[in-house]
Image (cartoon, rainbow, N blue to C red; front, top):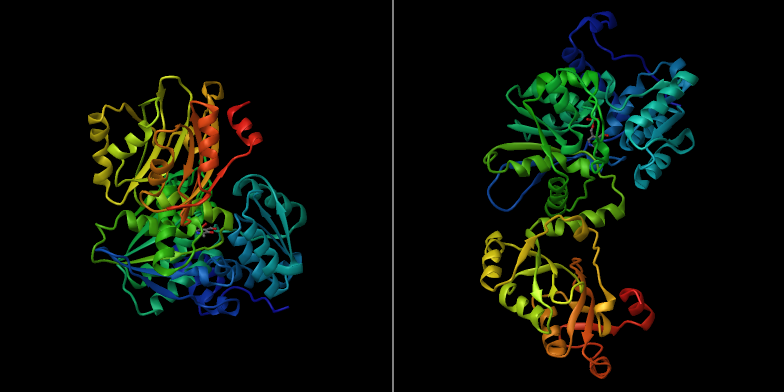
Length: 528
Ligand SMILES: Cc1ncc(COP(=O)(O)O)c(C=O)c1O
Protein backbone atom coordinates (compact mmCIF):
# COMPACT_ATOMS: atom_id res chain seq x y z
CA UNK A 1 0.00 0.00 0.00
CA UNK A 2 1.28 3.44 -0.86
CA UNK A 3 1.26 5.92 1.97
CA UNK A 4 -1.53 8.50 1.93
CA UNK A 5 -0.61 12.10 2.48
CA UNK A 6 -2.48 14.94 4.13
CA UNK A 7 -3.60 18.13 2.35
CA UNK A 8 -1.43 19.95 -0.14
CA UNK A 9 2.05 21.08 0.62
CA UNK A 10 3.08 24.72 0.28
CA UNK A 11 3.35 27.89 2.25
CA UNK A 12 -0.36 28.44 3.04
CA UNK A 13 -1.62 26.81 6.25
CA UNK A 14 -4.85 24.80 6.31
CA UNK A 15 -6.65 27.48 8.35
CA UNK A 16 -5.59 30.21 5.97
CA UNK A 17 -6.76 28.11 3.05
CA UNK A 18 -10.19 27.50 4.56
CA UNK A 19 -10.70 31.26 4.80
CA UNK A 20 -9.87 31.86 1.16
CA UNK A 21 -12.61 32.34 -1.44
CA UNK A 22 -13.55 29.11 -3.20
CA UNK A 23 -12.00 30.01 -6.54
CA UNK A 24 -8.64 30.74 -4.93
CA UNK A 25 -8.75 27.54 -2.94
CA UNK A 26 -9.57 25.60 -6.07
CA UNK A 27 -6.66 27.22 -7.91
CA UNK A 28 -4.34 26.30 -5.09
CA UNK A 29 -5.66 22.76 -4.90
CA UNK A 30 -5.05 22.34 -8.64
CA UNK A 31 -1.43 23.27 -7.99
CA UNK A 32 -1.22 20.53 -5.37
CA UNK A 33 -3.11 18.09 -7.58
CA UNK A 34 -0.42 18.54 -10.25
CA UNK A 35 2.04 17.01 -7.80
CA UNK A 36 -0.18 14.03 -7.00
CA UNK A 37 -2.10 12.74 -9.98
CA UNK A 38 0.84 11.67 -12.14
CA UNK A 39 1.61 8.94 -9.62
CA UNK A 40 -1.60 7.31 -10.90
CA UNK A 41 -1.76 8.13 -14.59
CA UNK A 42 -0.19 9.97 -17.47
CA UNK A 43 -0.85 13.22 -19.28
CA UNK A 44 -3.06 12.85 -22.36
CA UNK A 45 -2.44 14.30 -25.84
CA UNK A 46 -4.02 17.40 -27.33
CA UNK A 47 -4.82 16.81 -30.97
CA UNK A 48 -5.98 19.00 -33.82
CA UNK A 49 -9.24 17.99 -35.48
CA UNK A 50 -9.25 19.12 -39.09
CA UNK A 51 -12.66 19.24 -40.74
CA UNK A 52 -13.47 20.03 -44.34
CA UNK A 53 -14.69 23.55 -45.08
CA UNK A 54 -14.39 26.80 -43.17
CA UNK A 55 -14.72 26.87 -39.39
CA UNK A 56 -12.71 27.26 -36.19
CA UNK A 57 -9.38 25.64 -35.41
CA UNK A 58 -10.51 22.79 -33.17
CA UNK A 59 -8.25 21.09 -30.61
CA UNK A 60 -9.34 17.93 -28.84
CA UNK A 61 -8.02 16.91 -25.43
CA UNK A 62 -7.89 13.12 -25.73
CA UNK A 63 -9.01 11.97 -22.28
CA UNK A 64 -10.27 8.80 -23.93
CA UNK A 65 -6.63 7.71 -24.09
CA UNK A 66 -6.17 7.57 -20.32
CA UNK A 67 -6.08 4.23 -18.51
CA UNK A 68 -9.75 4.43 -17.53
CA UNK A 69 -10.77 5.92 -20.91
CA UNK A 70 -12.08 9.09 -19.30
CA UNK A 71 -10.68 12.02 -17.30
CA UNK A 72 -12.26 10.73 -14.08
CA UNK A 73 -9.10 9.15 -12.69
CA UNK A 74 -7.74 12.63 -12.05
CA UNK A 75 -10.33 13.77 -9.52
CA UNK A 76 -10.77 10.40 -7.84
CA UNK A 77 -7.03 9.84 -7.42
CA UNK A 78 -6.45 13.36 -6.15
CA UNK A 79 -9.23 12.97 -3.58
CA UNK A 80 -8.17 9.55 -2.39
CA UNK A 81 -4.50 10.49 -2.21
CA UNK A 82 -5.29 12.91 0.63
CA UNK A 83 -7.22 10.44 2.79
CA UNK A 84 -5.72 10.13 6.25
CA UNK A 85 -4.51 6.74 7.37
CA UNK A 86 -7.59 6.33 9.55
CA UNK A 87 -9.91 7.23 6.65
CA UNK A 88 -8.08 4.91 4.29
CA UNK A 89 -8.56 2.09 6.77
CA UNK A 90 -12.33 2.69 6.83
CA UNK A 91 -12.42 2.42 3.05
CA UNK A 92 -14.39 4.52 0.58
CA UNK A 93 -17.86 4.42 -0.87
CA UNK A 94 -19.09 6.22 -3.96
CA UNK A 95 -21.90 6.51 -6.48
CA UNK A 96 -21.19 6.91 -10.13
CA UNK A 97 -22.75 6.74 -13.56
CA UNK A 98 -19.76 4.54 -14.41
CA UNK A 99 -16.73 6.67 -15.21
CA UNK A 100 -15.99 8.11 -11.78
CA UNK A 101 -16.29 4.52 -10.52
CA UNK A 102 -13.36 3.54 -12.68
CA UNK A 103 -11.27 6.39 -11.32
CA UNK A 104 -12.09 5.33 -7.77
CA UNK A 105 -11.27 1.71 -8.63
CA UNK A 106 -7.91 2.71 -10.09
CA UNK A 107 -7.04 4.79 -7.02
CA UNK A 108 -8.29 2.06 -4.66
CA UNK A 109 -5.93 -0.48 -6.13
CA UNK A 110 -2.97 1.90 -6.30
CA UNK A 111 -3.46 2.98 -2.67
CA UNK A 112 -4.59 -0.39 -1.30
CA UNK A 113 -7.93 1.03 -0.09
CA UNK A 114 -11.18 -0.91 -0.33
CA UNK A 115 -14.04 0.71 -2.26
CA UNK A 116 -17.76 0.01 -2.49
CA UNK A 117 -19.20 1.44 -5.67
CA UNK A 118 -22.89 2.06 -6.36
CA UNK A 119 -24.00 2.46 -9.95
CA UNK A 120 -27.43 2.60 -11.65
CA UNK A 121 -28.73 -0.75 -12.87
CA UNK A 122 -28.58 0.50 -16.47
CA UNK A 123 -24.83 1.26 -16.31
CA UNK A 124 -23.23 0.04 -19.57
CA UNK A 125 -21.56 -3.36 -19.14
CA UNK A 126 -18.31 -1.92 -20.44
CA UNK A 127 -18.17 0.43 -17.45
CA UNK A 128 -18.99 -2.31 -14.94
CA UNK A 129 -16.32 -4.69 -16.17
CA UNK A 130 -13.77 -1.86 -16.36
CA UNK A 131 -14.39 -1.08 -12.67
CA UNK A 132 -13.61 -4.67 -11.75
CA UNK A 133 -10.62 -4.69 -14.06
CA UNK A 134 -9.09 -1.57 -12.49
CA UNK A 135 -10.02 -2.24 -8.89
CA UNK A 136 -9.50 -6.02 -8.72
CA UNK A 137 -10.13 -7.52 -5.28
CA UNK A 138 -10.42 -4.13 -3.65
CA UNK A 139 -13.70 -3.05 -5.22
CA UNK A 140 -17.26 -4.28 -4.99
CA UNK A 141 -20.01 -3.09 -7.30
CA UNK A 142 -23.60 -2.61 -6.19
CA UNK A 143 -26.16 -1.90 -8.90
CA UNK A 144 -28.88 0.22 -7.41
CA UNK A 145 -31.78 2.22 -8.83
CA UNK A 146 -32.33 3.46 -12.35
CA UNK A 147 -30.44 6.71 -12.17
CA UNK A 148 -27.28 8.23 -10.73
CA UNK A 149 -29.31 9.90 -7.98
CA UNK A 150 -30.78 6.60 -6.84
CA UNK A 151 -27.28 5.13 -6.72
CA UNK A 152 -26.21 8.14 -4.62
CA UNK A 153 -29.03 7.43 -2.21
CA UNK A 154 -27.84 3.85 -1.68
CA UNK A 155 -24.20 4.91 -1.37
CA UNK A 156 -25.03 7.59 1.22
CA UNK A 157 -26.90 4.98 3.25
CA UNK A 158 -23.80 2.77 3.12
CA UNK A 159 -21.66 5.74 4.24
CA UNK A 160 -23.93 6.32 7.25
CA UNK A 161 -24.01 2.68 8.21
CA UNK A 162 -20.33 1.80 7.76
CA UNK A 163 -18.46 5.07 8.29
CA UNK A 164 -16.69 4.68 4.96
CA UNK A 165 -15.52 7.94 3.33
CA UNK A 166 -17.79 9.16 0.57
CA UNK A 167 -15.84 10.14 -2.55
CA UNK A 168 -18.11 12.46 -4.47
CA UNK A 169 -18.03 12.38 -8.27
CA UNK A 170 -18.00 16.18 -8.59
CA UNK A 171 -19.12 18.09 -5.50
CA UNK A 172 -15.73 18.06 -3.82
CA UNK A 173 -12.83 20.49 -3.91
CA UNK A 174 -10.15 17.82 -4.40
CA UNK A 175 -12.15 16.12 -7.14
CA UNK A 176 -12.66 19.39 -9.02
CA UNK A 177 -8.97 20.18 -8.56
CA UNK A 178 -7.96 16.78 -9.93
CA UNK A 179 -10.06 17.34 -13.06
CA UNK A 180 -8.35 20.74 -13.39
CA UNK A 181 -5.03 19.03 -14.12
CA UNK A 182 -6.18 18.31 -17.64
CA UNK A 183 -6.38 22.05 -18.19
CA UNK A 184 -2.81 22.40 -16.96
CA UNK A 185 -1.70 19.98 -19.68
CA UNK A 186 -3.54 22.12 -22.23
CA UNK A 187 -1.72 25.21 -20.99
CA UNK A 188 1.63 23.43 -21.10
CA UNK A 189 0.98 22.06 -24.61
CA UNK A 190 2.00 25.41 -26.10
CA UNK A 191 -1.07 25.43 -28.40
CA UNK A 192 -2.81 28.24 -26.49
CA UNK A 193 -4.14 30.72 -25.93
CA UNK A 194 -7.57 29.48 -26.90
CA UNK A 195 -10.46 31.78 -27.71
CA UNK A 196 -13.06 29.42 -26.36
CA UNK A 197 -13.46 26.11 -24.51
CA UNK A 198 -16.62 24.01 -24.74
CA UNK A 199 -16.89 21.90 -21.59
CA UNK A 200 -19.52 19.27 -20.94
CA UNK A 201 -21.34 19.30 -17.64
CA UNK A 202 -22.81 16.51 -15.55
CA UNK A 203 -22.55 17.69 -11.97
CA UNK A 204 -20.06 20.38 -13.00
CA UNK A 205 -16.75 19.11 -11.54
CA UNK A 206 -14.93 19.00 -14.86
CA UNK A 207 -16.19 22.43 -15.94
CA UNK A 208 -15.33 23.99 -12.55
CA UNK A 209 -11.75 22.68 -12.40
CA UNK A 210 -10.92 23.17 -16.05
CA UNK A 211 -12.50 26.60 -16.44
CA UNK A 212 -10.76 27.90 -13.32
CA UNK A 213 -7.33 26.86 -14.55
CA UNK A 214 -7.83 28.03 -18.14
CA UNK A 215 -9.00 31.43 -16.95
CA UNK A 216 -5.99 31.72 -14.67
CA UNK A 217 -3.73 31.68 -17.72
CA UNK A 218 -6.04 33.10 -20.35
CA UNK A 219 -8.46 35.50 -18.63
CA UNK A 220 -10.16 36.35 -21.95
CA UNK A 221 -11.03 32.79 -22.87
CA UNK A 222 -14.75 32.25 -23.30
CA UNK A 223 -15.95 29.17 -21.41
CA UNK A 224 -19.13 27.57 -22.65
CA UNK A 225 -20.79 24.85 -20.58
CA UNK A 226 -22.45 22.15 -22.65
CA UNK A 227 -25.38 20.01 -21.56
CA UNK A 228 -27.70 17.74 -23.45
CA UNK A 229 -31.31 18.89 -23.74
CA UNK A 230 -32.77 16.40 -21.30
CA UNK A 231 -30.10 16.97 -18.63
CA UNK A 232 -29.58 20.71 -18.44
CA UNK A 233 -29.09 20.90 -14.66
CA UNK A 234 -26.43 23.65 -14.67
CA UNK A 235 -28.54 25.80 -16.94
CA UNK A 236 -31.47 25.32 -14.56
CA UNK A 237 -29.23 26.19 -11.60
CA UNK A 238 -27.96 29.37 -13.27
CA UNK A 239 -31.52 30.43 -14.03
CA UNK A 240 -32.76 29.65 -10.51
CA UNK A 241 -29.69 31.11 -8.79
CA UNK A 242 -29.01 27.79 -7.03
CA UNK A 243 -28.86 24.09 -7.95
CA UNK A 244 -32.33 22.69 -8.54
CA UNK A 245 -33.50 19.15 -9.21
CA UNK A 246 -34.65 18.25 -12.72
CA UNK A 247 -37.82 16.18 -12.79
CA UNK A 248 -37.09 14.39 -16.04
CA UNK A 249 -33.66 13.12 -17.03
CA UNK A 250 -32.58 11.91 -20.44
CA UNK A 251 -30.10 9.03 -20.24
CA UNK A 252 -28.66 8.96 -23.75
CA UNK A 253 -25.50 10.74 -22.57
CA UNK A 254 -25.27 8.46 -19.54
CA UNK A 255 -21.97 9.93 -18.29
CA UNK A 256 -23.53 13.33 -17.70
CA UNK A 257 -26.99 12.20 -16.57
CA UNK A 258 -27.19 14.14 -13.31
CA UNK A 259 -30.41 15.70 -11.98
CA UNK A 260 -28.85 18.46 -9.92
CA UNK A 261 -25.63 20.43 -10.43
CA UNK A 262 -23.16 20.18 -7.54
CA UNK A 263 -23.09 23.05 -5.00
CA UNK A 264 -19.36 23.70 -5.25
CA UNK A 265 -19.19 23.38 -9.06
CA UNK A 266 -22.17 25.75 -9.28
CA UNK A 267 -20.42 28.35 -7.15
CA UNK A 268 -17.45 28.23 -9.52
CA UNK A 269 -19.30 27.86 -12.82
CA UNK A 270 -21.64 30.79 -12.17
CA UNK A 271 -18.56 33.02 -12.48
CA UNK A 272 -16.45 31.21 -15.09
CA UNK A 273 -19.07 30.21 -17.67
CA UNK A 274 -20.11 32.74 -20.27
CA UNK A 275 -23.18 30.65 -21.01
CA UNK A 276 -24.51 27.11 -21.20
CA UNK A 277 -25.45 25.57 -24.53
CA UNK A 278 -27.74 22.61 -24.92
CA UNK A 279 -27.27 20.00 -27.61
CA UNK A 280 -29.68 17.33 -28.85
CA UNK A 281 -28.91 13.62 -28.81
CA UNK A 282 -28.86 13.73 -32.58
CA UNK A 283 -26.24 16.49 -32.54
CA UNK A 284 -24.19 14.45 -30.08
CA UNK A 285 -24.41 11.38 -32.32
CA UNK A 286 -23.30 13.49 -35.25
CA UNK A 287 -20.32 14.76 -33.24
CA UNK A 288 -19.39 11.14 -32.42
CA UNK A 289 -19.32 10.45 -36.12
CA UNK A 290 -17.19 13.54 -36.76
CA UNK A 291 -14.67 12.35 -34.15
CA UNK A 292 -14.56 8.96 -35.80
CA UNK A 293 -14.11 10.42 -39.25
CA UNK A 294 -11.59 13.06 -38.23
CA UNK A 295 -9.48 11.31 -35.60
CA UNK A 296 -10.59 7.66 -35.85
CA UNK A 297 -11.52 7.71 -32.20
CA UNK A 298 -14.70 6.64 -30.49
CA UNK A 299 -16.35 8.86 -27.91
CA UNK A 300 -19.15 7.88 -25.58
CA UNK A 301 -22.10 10.27 -26.00
CA UNK A 302 -21.10 12.48 -23.04
CA UNK A 303 -17.58 12.64 -24.46
CA UNK A 304 -18.78 14.21 -27.72
CA UNK A 305 -21.10 16.85 -26.28
CA UNK A 306 -18.54 19.64 -26.34
CA UNK A 307 -17.78 19.05 -30.00
CA UNK A 308 -21.50 18.87 -30.75
CA UNK A 309 -21.89 22.44 -29.48
CA UNK A 310 -18.88 23.60 -31.51
CA UNK A 311 -20.26 22.05 -34.70
CA UNK A 312 -23.58 23.76 -34.07
CA UNK A 313 -21.82 27.14 -33.86
CA UNK A 314 -19.24 26.55 -36.56
CA UNK A 315 -20.04 29.59 -38.63
CA UNK A 316 -19.84 31.96 -35.64
CA UNK A 317 -16.52 30.47 -34.53
CA UNK A 318 -14.80 31.00 -37.87
CA UNK A 319 -11.12 31.81 -37.38
CA UNK A 320 -11.18 31.10 -33.64
CA UNK A 321 -9.09 28.58 -31.74
CA UNK A 322 -11.38 26.31 -29.80
CA UNK A 323 -10.78 23.63 -27.19
CA UNK A 324 -13.01 20.60 -26.62
CA UNK A 325 -12.48 17.73 -24.22
CA UNK A 326 -13.15 14.22 -25.46
CA UNK A 327 -13.73 13.24 -21.88
CA UNK A 328 -14.86 9.64 -22.16
CA UNK A 329 -14.96 6.62 -24.47
CA UNK A 330 -16.79 4.09 -22.33
CA UNK A 331 -19.62 3.00 -24.57
CA UNK A 332 -21.17 -0.41 -25.07
CA UNK A 333 -20.39 -1.86 -28.47
CA UNK A 334 -24.08 -2.48 -29.19
CA UNK A 335 -25.00 1.14 -28.54
CA UNK A 336 -22.38 2.14 -31.06
CA UNK A 337 -24.24 0.22 -33.76
CA UNK A 338 -27.53 1.92 -33.02
CA UNK A 339 -25.94 5.38 -32.97
CA UNK A 340 -23.99 4.75 -36.17
CA UNK A 341 -27.16 3.73 -37.92
CA UNK A 342 -29.19 6.70 -36.75
CA UNK A 343 -26.45 9.10 -37.70
CA UNK A 344 -26.02 7.55 -41.11
CA UNK A 345 -29.20 9.30 -42.13
CA UNK A 346 -28.89 12.35 -39.95
CA UNK A 347 -25.73 13.24 -41.84
CA UNK A 348 -27.75 13.80 -44.97
CA UNK A 349 -30.94 15.70 -45.41
CA UNK A 350 -33.74 13.21 -44.79
CA UNK A 351 -37.50 13.07 -44.91
CA UNK A 352 -40.07 10.35 -44.32
CA UNK A 353 -43.10 10.49 -46.60
CA UNK A 354 -46.20 8.38 -46.93
CA UNK A 355 -47.42 8.50 -50.51
CA UNK A 356 -50.75 7.34 -51.90
CA UNK A 357 -50.71 5.26 -55.07
CA UNK A 358 -53.57 3.35 -56.69
CA UNK A 359 -53.57 -0.37 -55.84
CA UNK A 360 -52.72 -1.78 -59.27
CA UNK A 361 -49.65 -3.48 -60.69
CA UNK A 362 -46.86 -1.18 -61.79
CA UNK A 363 -47.84 1.94 -59.85
CA UNK A 364 -45.08 1.58 -57.26
CA UNK A 365 -42.43 1.51 -59.97
CA UNK A 366 -44.13 4.42 -61.69
CA UNK A 367 -43.77 6.44 -58.47
CA UNK A 368 -40.10 5.49 -58.17
CA UNK A 369 -39.47 6.43 -61.81
CA UNK A 370 -41.36 9.70 -61.83
CA UNK A 371 -40.59 11.18 -58.45
CA UNK A 372 -37.70 9.43 -56.73
CA UNK A 373 -35.13 9.19 -59.51
CA UNK A 374 -31.73 10.29 -58.15
CA UNK A 375 -32.92 10.19 -54.53
CA UNK A 376 -31.64 7.61 -52.08
CA UNK A 377 -34.31 5.42 -50.46
CA UNK A 378 -32.93 4.80 -46.97
CA UNK A 379 -36.02 3.04 -45.67
CA UNK A 380 -39.06 1.58 -47.38
CA UNK A 381 -42.03 0.19 -45.45
CA UNK A 382 -45.26 -1.00 -46.94
CA UNK A 383 -47.97 -3.53 -46.20
CA UNK A 384 -51.20 -3.79 -48.17
CA UNK A 385 -54.01 -2.67 -45.91
CA UNK A 386 -56.66 -1.29 -48.29
CA UNK A 387 -58.49 -2.41 -51.46
CA UNK A 388 -58.11 0.69 -53.57
CA UNK A 389 -55.11 2.65 -52.39
CA UNK A 390 -51.62 1.79 -51.21
CA UNK A 391 -49.71 4.02 -48.77
CA UNK A 392 -46.03 3.04 -48.93
CA UNK A 393 -43.73 4.91 -46.53
CA UNK A 394 -40.32 6.03 -47.74
CA UNK A 395 -37.47 7.64 -45.88
CA UNK A 396 -35.54 9.52 -48.51
CA UNK A 397 -32.12 11.05 -48.15
CA UNK A 398 -29.97 13.27 -50.30
CA UNK A 399 -26.61 14.98 -49.87
CA UNK A 400 -28.18 18.14 -51.13
CA UNK A 401 -31.30 19.32 -49.23
CA UNK A 402 -32.57 21.10 -52.36
CA UNK A 403 -33.27 17.73 -53.99
CA UNK A 404 -35.62 16.84 -51.16
CA UNK A 405 -37.20 20.26 -51.04
CA UNK A 406 -38.25 19.81 -54.68
CA UNK A 407 -39.99 16.52 -53.89
CA UNK A 408 -43.40 17.75 -52.67
CA UNK A 409 -43.89 19.72 -55.90
CA UNK A 410 -42.95 16.65 -57.95
CA UNK A 411 -45.45 14.50 -56.06
CA UNK A 412 -48.16 17.13 -56.44
CA UNK A 413 -47.53 17.41 -60.18
CA UNK A 414 -47.62 13.62 -60.50
CA UNK A 415 -51.02 13.65 -58.75
CA UNK A 416 -49.75 11.70 -55.72
CA UNK A 417 -51.33 12.55 -52.39
CA UNK A 418 -48.67 12.53 -49.63
CA UNK A 419 -48.10 13.09 -45.94
CA UNK A 420 -44.92 13.85 -43.98
CA UNK A 421 -44.20 11.16 -41.37
CA UNK A 422 -40.69 12.19 -40.37
CA UNK A 423 -40.03 10.84 -36.83
CA UNK A 424 -43.42 9.06 -36.63
CA UNK A 425 -43.40 6.36 -33.96
CA UNK A 426 -44.90 3.54 -36.05
CA UNK A 427 -42.31 4.12 -38.77
CA UNK A 428 -39.49 4.26 -36.24
CA UNK A 429 -40.59 0.90 -34.77
CA UNK A 430 -41.21 -0.58 -38.22
CA UNK A 431 -44.80 -1.44 -37.38
CA UNK A 432 -45.91 -2.45 -40.88
CA UNK A 433 -49.57 -3.48 -41.03
CA UNK A 434 -50.46 -6.14 -43.65
CA UNK A 435 -53.97 -7.44 -44.28
CA UNK A 436 -53.57 -11.00 -45.46
CA UNK A 437 -57.29 -11.28 -46.27
CA UNK A 438 -56.84 -8.79 -49.14
CA UNK A 439 -54.21 -10.91 -50.88
CA UNK A 440 -54.93 -13.39 -53.69
CA UNK A 441 -51.84 -15.52 -54.28
CA UNK A 442 -49.02 -14.03 -52.27
CA UNK A 443 -45.36 -14.98 -52.19
CA UNK A 444 -42.52 -13.49 -50.19
CA UNK A 445 -38.90 -13.08 -51.16
CA UNK A 446 -35.74 -12.32 -49.27
CA UNK A 447 -33.62 -10.16 -51.49
CA UNK A 448 -29.98 -9.18 -50.92
CA UNK A 449 -28.91 -6.63 -53.48
CA UNK A 450 -25.80 -4.53 -54.01
CA UNK A 451 -26.44 -1.21 -52.37
CA UNK A 452 -26.00 1.19 -55.25
CA UNK A 453 -28.36 3.65 -56.82
CA UNK A 454 -30.92 1.90 -59.00
CA UNK A 455 -30.13 -1.72 -58.00
CA UNK A 456 -33.47 -2.33 -56.31
CA UNK A 457 -35.36 -0.52 -59.02
CA UNK A 458 -33.67 -2.62 -61.70
CA UNK A 459 -34.57 -5.85 -59.93
CA UNK A 460 -38.23 -4.87 -59.71
CA UNK A 461 -38.21 -3.62 -63.28
CA UNK A 462 -36.62 -6.73 -64.79
CA UNK A 463 -38.33 -9.43 -62.78
CA UNK A 464 -41.60 -8.17 -61.34
CA UNK A 465 -43.04 -5.42 -63.52
CA UNK A 466 -46.29 -6.52 -65.14
CA UNK A 467 -46.46 -9.89 -63.33
CA UNK A 468 -47.38 -9.11 -59.75
CA UNK A 469 -48.18 -6.22 -57.48
CA UNK A 470 -46.07 -5.44 -54.47
CA UNK A 471 -48.03 -6.14 -51.28
CA UNK A 472 -45.26 -5.87 -48.73
CA UNK A 473 -41.91 -4.15 -48.52
CA UNK A 474 -39.52 -4.00 -45.60
CA UNK A 475 -36.13 -2.48 -46.29
CA UNK A 476 -33.74 -0.37 -44.29
CA UNK A 477 -30.37 0.83 -45.48
CA UNK A 478 -27.73 -0.53 -43.15
CA UNK A 479 -24.44 0.91 -44.35
CA UNK A 480 -23.25 -2.58 -45.30
CA UNK A 481 -22.58 -2.77 -48.99
CA UNK A 482 -25.47 -5.20 -49.28
CA UNK A 483 -29.09 -4.07 -48.95
CA UNK A 484 -31.45 -6.63 -47.41
CA UNK A 485 -35.15 -6.48 -48.15
CA UNK A 486 -38.18 -8.60 -47.43
CA UNK A 487 -40.60 -8.28 -50.33
CA UNK A 488 -44.18 -9.53 -50.68
CA UNK A 489 -45.73 -10.01 -54.11
CA UNK A 490 -49.37 -10.68 -54.89
CA UNK A 491 -50.22 -12.59 -58.09
CA UNK A 492 -53.56 -12.80 -59.94
CA UNK A 493 -53.30 -16.60 -60.15
CA UNK A 494 -51.50 -19.48 -58.52
CA UNK A 495 -50.05 -20.39 -61.95
CA UNK A 496 -48.50 -16.93 -62.39
CA UNK A 497 -47.04 -17.10 -58.91
CA UNK A 498 -45.56 -20.58 -59.31
CA UNK A 499 -44.13 -19.71 -62.72
CA UNK A 500 -42.31 -16.65 -61.40
CA UNK A 501 -41.07 -18.41 -58.28
CA UNK A 502 -39.68 -21.22 -60.42
CA UNK A 503 -38.04 -18.97 -62.96
CA UNK A 504 -36.56 -16.15 -60.89
CA UNK A 505 -32.78 -16.62 -60.68
CA UNK A 506 -31.32 -16.94 -57.18
CA UNK A 507 -28.78 -14.28 -58.09
CA UNK A 508 -28.34 -11.92 -60.98
CA UNK A 509 -27.47 -8.48 -62.19
CA UNK A 510 -27.38 -6.17 -59.16
CA UNK A 511 -28.49 -8.74 -56.59
CA UNK A 512 -26.70 -11.63 -54.97
CA UNK A 513 -29.53 -13.55 -53.33
CA UNK A 514 -33.20 -13.96 -54.09
CA UNK A 515 -34.81 -16.60 -51.94
CA UNK A 516 -38.54 -17.40 -51.65
CA UNK A 517 -39.69 -17.71 -48.03
CA UNK A 518 -41.10 -21.02 -46.83
CA UNK A 519 -44.85 -21.56 -46.37
CA UNK A 520 -44.78 -21.28 -42.58
CA UNK A 521 -43.10 -17.85 -42.72
CA UNK A 522 -45.54 -16.66 -45.42
CA UNK A 523 -48.41 -17.80 -43.30
CA UNK A 524 -47.14 -15.91 -40.25
CA UNK A 525 -46.71 -12.76 -42.33
CA UNK A 526 -50.24 -12.91 -43.71
CA UNK A 527 -51.79 -13.91 -40.40
CA UNK A 528 -52.92 -17.20 -42.00
C1 LIG B 1 -17.60 11.19 -20.16
C2 LIG B 1 -18.05 12.22 -19.18
N1 LIG B 1 -18.12 13.48 -19.55
C3 LIG B 1 -18.52 14.44 -18.70
C4 LIG B 1 -18.90 14.16 -17.42
C5 LIG B 1 -19.38 15.27 -16.53
O1 LIG B 1 -18.59 15.47 -15.49
P1 LIG B 1 -18.95 16.39 -14.23
O2 LIG B 1 -19.89 15.61 -13.36
O3 LIG B 1 -17.65 16.60 -13.62
O4 LIG B 1 -19.60 17.60 -14.76
C6 LIG B 1 -18.84 12.86 -16.98
C7 LIG B 1 -19.20 12.50 -15.63
O5 LIG B 1 -19.08 11.36 -15.23
C8 LIG B 1 -18.40 11.85 -17.88
O6 LIG B 1 -18.34 10.58 -17.52
